[in-house]
Structure formats: C-alpha cells, structure tokens
Image 1 (tube, rainbow, N blue to C red):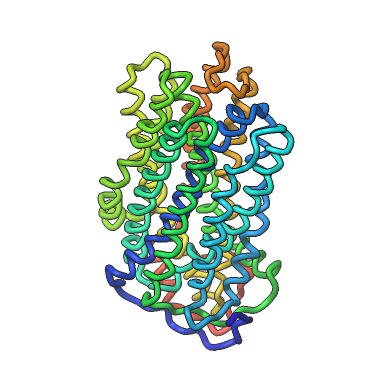
Image 2: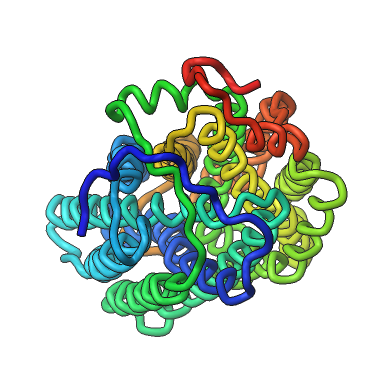
Length: 466
C-alpha cells in the first residue's frame, strides 16, 4: 500500500552494528547500480560512433539527454519515497518494481535497428530515457536506506565497505564481460546479446537486494512537511551537504570521462580492442583488495581524510596516463591500477558521509528528508556521469575524431592525442579541483554525534548546518 506518511513523533533510527546478513543483503543492490552505472558509460558512446556511425558531438548529446532527465527526476523520486509506506518497508518495494523495469529497458537499449541512422539514434534516446526513469526510482530509495538502518557513525562506513566491495565486483564483471560478449558474438548481434546478458545481471541484483533486506532494521522519521520545493530549499541550505555533493559530482564527471575513453584508448593507443577488458579490470579490481583497508584508514583517521587521500591517488594515476602513448603497455595498466585504488576510496567515503549529512538534518528538524537528500545526490552523480562521456566526446570532436561504421577507421594524430588527454589530463584536473572543494567539509564524527544527540524544541530548518 502506498500513500503519504502521517505526521508522527520521530522514531529512533536503529543504533549499533548491523548483522552481516543485513550488510550483505543491502550490498547486493550495487550489482544493479554498478552494472547500469558502468556499461552505458563504457560502450554506449562507441556503439553510437562506431556501430551506428553517429558523429562524435551528436553522440555525446544523445548520451547526455536521457541522463539530464534524471537530474530533474531524482529529487522527485526521493520525495515520493519519503512519503511512501508499505508493509515491506518504505524503500524496498521500489527495489523490486523499478529494478525489474530497469533490467527490461536495458535489454532494449542495444536491441534497436542499425539503420536508418536517425531512427537508430532515436531508439537509443527513447530506450535510455526509459532506463534512466526506472533507475531513478531504484537508486534513490536504495541510497536512502543506510540513513534509516543505523545511526552509528562507523557502522555506516562498514555498511559502505560491503557495498563498495560488491559494487567493485559488479563493475568488474559487467565492465569486463560486456565488451567481451560484444566482441565474441560479432558486430551484427554482439551489442544485442550483451544488452540482454547485462539486463539479466541487473535483474539478479535488484531481486537480491529486495529479498536480502527483508529482515534489515528500519527506523525512520515519519513527519514530512512542505512540498518538494520547500524541502529542496532546506537541503540546499545544508552547507556540508553542498560541499560533499559538489566534490562528488566533479569526481563523477572525471570518472565518466575515463570510462568513456577506455574503448578508445584500447583501440587507438594500445592498439588492441581486447585491451579494453584488461584496462577495465585494472581500474576496478583493486577495490576488491583495498576497500577493507580504506575502511580501517577511515576509522583511524576520519572519513574526510580518507576521501582526500583516495582522491589524490586517483588524480596521480590519471596524471601518469598523460604519457600513455610513450609508456610501455604494462606501465599504462599500472597507472590505471593506481587510479583504481583511489577510486575505491573515493566511492566508499562519500557514500558513508552522505547518511551523516541526512541524519544531522533529521535530528535538527525532526523531519525525514533522506529521500530528498539522496535524490539530489544521485541527480548530481547522474549529471556528472552523463557529462563525462559528453565531455570526452567534445574532446574527441576537437581532436578531429573520425566517426565511422567501421570501428577500425584510421584516426589522425590529433585525434589520438585527444583520446589520450581526455582519458588522463582532463579527469586529473577535475579531481584536483574537487579537493579544493572538499577542504570546506566539516562534519567529523564528533560533529555528527553532537548533532544527532540534540533535538531542539523549535529547530530552524532554514539555517545552515552548524
């Protein structure tokens, strides 16, 4: 049953450690988010430019437009989930319904006609728009759940450790298998078979999260007042959330550009289409090893410090790739692995910091806006990941990249330079810029605990976080 949640005295969020089963169950949702967040960014631009023959600049627009819709839709999805109530819990029904829809739409994304070109491009736009809509109603409730599962500062980091580990595995499996399936099947049917396979993978993750969180503890603040515009204005006034969001969006933009460049670097810099799988493995696989180490580092030194160090590693690896054309092949893979080590921490720490910001707001105002918070957050992430391929496509266009239905078309030297710099220097500059923003974040453990212990009689939600 759905409907608006009635006004009520806030219920306490469960405190203390979660069970391993609850952590694992929640983490399974990252199979769906990891696969959908990765494969379109990795293969949709090459599909448009090298399979359908769409010009690079126009292909960037095609990739961006459906994602731009999510920027508008995600906060709305968050507001809807804040007001939803069900015997299954406030967020879980979205995991089942939207997750199933996402899987079906993804299978259709790469199943369209290859000609005429206008019809083929229109199919991609419509199918990607449907994917983006379903994804909004899956991702936003999913990301909102940690703030309602526990109020323990370090437990949120442990919960994100599980999530990022599964996320890394999902990204690794989907990102490595998608181009492999495409290449094994062949150019005519490869993209279609790949789309179906990844769609089934997304479905498995969505169903796993829905089933796995059935017994997870849920505590929520039931009172929600004001319309979406009023709630968004309150969220916009939260200084630390703004800082954290901008940092994360800049890094999502950098990551989106790097993902879009993998296939191009493999073919035009390393000289092997098969290298795209190995590059992707080097980018993602380190997270399976280092994520628990990042958790320990964060517990010892704080989430903000961990986030900053991880970001520095990400930027350093990207800067090393500026020399990719002259580096030995092993050197390129090693630099990408350094990026991967930093990427693992740069995913885990901000996702553990987001529930802190939402919990501080709930404690201060006595109202549940975690859905709106996560809606704005995922809208920002979506914008960054959508602009990343668009930015990379712009760099390709400036370099004179030659689009063709023949993926082996010769490229001028300027295009190869653009391929390299879009994969290295551009992301590095973006990550370094994000660190200047992160320096302004101030919600450490003591600040979060002090805020969540305090419940003012007349909180003023228009004031910035203290």
